[in-house]
Length: 204
Image (cartoon, rainbow, N blue to C red; front, side, top):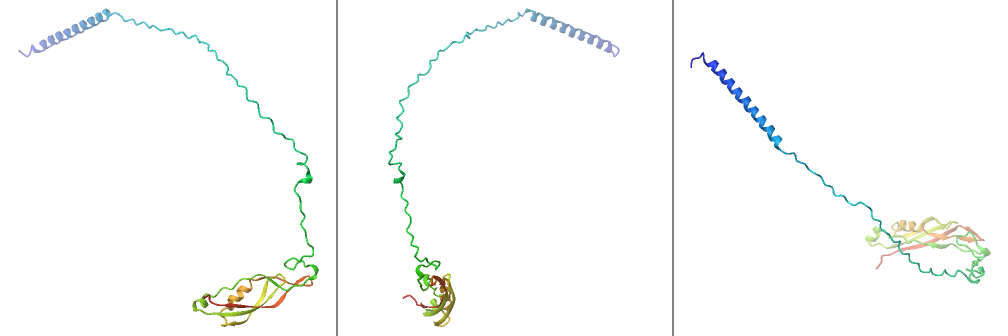
């Protein structure tokens, strides 16, 4: 085909194709409208069941109340006269105090009685560990005084054997002793020059 006829031929073909497309679209639209008109509308009916909501009255019977048993009789609160008699209560016994009795410690002494110092607490001396290990035995003689309160003072070693082995143990024991002080003419006074011998021996 000559080149001069190509352009008019293309235009004609394009017009034909366009017309065919428009005609096809028109036919489709017309057919869809008919289909829609032919369809009958669906109708749906809602049926509600009516319920009888009338309230029903219920008769309630009150509970039966049982009569309580008779309460027990109250206790007899009457008391005999003798139980309330104050003269028959607890007897109060007054202590029998002897005013002439002497009190320990020398604070009061009846009748002007005299007495020497009386020991109350005596503590045995400890055996020195060194002397025990070496098996040494001996003794210590201690002189001391007792003051007005019953305490020991001025404790000194008079003699010992062997010397200075058991002296310290004896002095530490005697200064812890307690006495009832000496009483003269109803008054406490110091007791001077008491002596005690402390033996130190190994147990066999």
